[in-house]
Length: 486
Ligand code: HEM
Image (cartoon, rainbow, N blue to C red; front, side):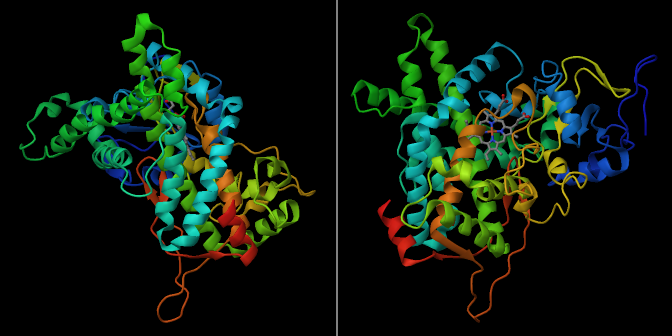
C-alpha cells in the first residue's frame, strides 16, 4: 500500500492498509509489536509505514537502512516524538525522552564526561570487585540467581553515580526506584501514549472516572518521581558536608559547579544520574539473565568458553580486563547474548526534524522513526539460524574475533546509548568471572529429571528471559577457593 502524501512529493514507504481513525492499531501485537513489524518487513521491505491514530511511524527493519538514515542524517533524527504520558507519569526529566535541544545537549555532555570509553576504564576495579561478589553470592544461594544478577547491575551503577553501597536486601533507595519503574512501565503502554496524545483532554479526567484508572498510577508516579530523583542526590550532598562521601559522578560534578548557576546545574546532575540508573540497571540484569539461560541451553558453548579461559588465564587466578584481547570466544559469547535475547527491541523512537527522501521514499517531518533492533538481530540475510545461540558466528577461520560485525544493541546516531562502554565492561567481567568459576546447567526436579528451559523473552523496554530455573555449582574446589578469596 503506497500513499502519495502531497502532489509532487515522494510516496511514504509501503505498509499495511490503515483503518480509519485507529490506523493499524488492531493489527499490531500489543505486547510484542517488534514481531508484527518484523513480519510486515518481510512483506513490505526494510522500511515501512505504520499508522496509529494519524501519527506516522516509519519502522526501520535493517541495520543497513538505520545506518544510512539515522546515522548519516543524525541531525535530522536526534529528536524524540512527544509522548503525552511522559509528563503525566513524571518522566519528563529522563534523558531518553528529552527532545533535541539545549537541555538534552547538557545531559549528553555530562553523561559523555562520565561514561565515554576512556573514562570508564577507571571503574574496572569496582566492576571486578562486584563481579567477584556476584560469584560468591551465586555459590552461597544459587536459587536466588536472578536477584544476584540484579544486585550486580544495580550496585555497579549506584557506586559510580552516587558512591552508594547498595544493601544486599531491601535497600530503601533501590526499592523506591524499582517501585517507580514498575508503576511507570506497567502503565506507559504505547497504546495509552497514543490515545492520550490524540485526545490530550483524557489526561485531565479524574482518576475515579471509568477507564481512567491509569490516573491513579500517574498520580503515584508523579509523587514518587521527585523522591526518586532527589533522595540519593541529597545523600551525597549530606555526606560531602560531613566529608564521608565516596568519590562518584554526583560528588565530582558538584565540586565543579558554577555558583552563579547552581540551581540549574544541580537539576541537570540529578536528572542525568536518575536517567542513567533507569536506563542502565535493568538492561544489564536482563543481559546477564540471558547469558545464564544460554549457558543452560548450550552446554557445549559453556565448555568451549571455559576451555579458552583455562588455557589463557590458568587456574590460579580469575580473569581480568587485561585478558580480554586473548579471549575472543568469551567476547563472542557476549556478542551473541546481546543478539540472541538481551535487546531493547524497538530502542527508543526517534523523531524526524525535517523531510528526507530515501531510495525514492519520503520520511516526513514529524514522523516517529522506530529502529526495530529485534528485526536487525534476527535478520536471516546477516545471521544463519538466528534463533540459535552460536558464538562461533563471530569467530574467523583463524580463531580471531570477526571485525565485520555491526552491533545494533545500542541504537544509532546521536542518541546512541551513552552507557554502552560501561555496560559492556560490566557484562564482560561478570560473564568471564562466572565462566571461570561456575558450572551452570539444568536444574533437577524432585522426580530426578532435568527441568527444561524454553528460550522465551518479553518485556517493556528491555527484553527479559521468562523466569526459569537452573543449577549453579562451583566448577572445582580450586575455582571455589579462588572465588571465595578474590
Ligand atoms: C546492556 C545494557 C544496555 C543496553 C542494551 C542499552 C541500550 C540502549 C538503547 C538501544 C538506547 C536507545 C538508543 C536510541 O535512541 O537509538 C539507549 C539509550 C540510553 N541509554 Fe542505554 N543501554 C544499556 C545500558 C545503559 C547504561 C549502563 C546506561 C548508563 C549510563 C545507559 C544510559 C542510557 C541513556 C541515558 C539513554 C538515552 C540516550 C538519549 O536519549 O540521548 N544505558 N540504551
